[in-house]
Image (cartoon, rainbow, N blue to C red; front, side):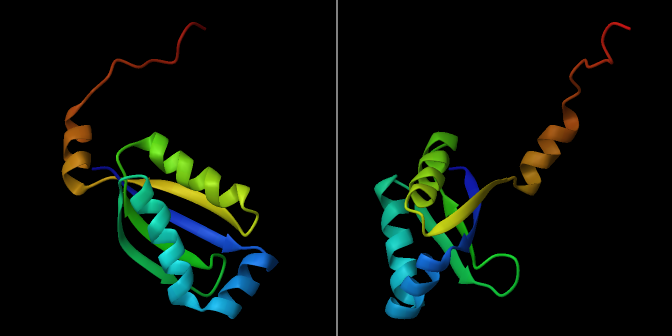
Length: 106
């Protein structure tokens, strides 16, 4: 199953929700959404800095990842960025592929 890194930055309303319900409650809400998409939450961590949350999820496909991102963003509590994660074995396979690519017509 494809893996994705979900990076979230809380808006004011989201930060208030964390303060009111705690971190475990936010993780539970997020995990419920992932499970609803037939995925699995691998890790969920709060951070200090540019982002507030880093989560690694297994999801069936990119459409499920997009649905998760859109649902969170539409809620207005966080801005989300989703990154496709690639295994070392997938990079090995990619390194063996050599598509014909050129600069195109001049």
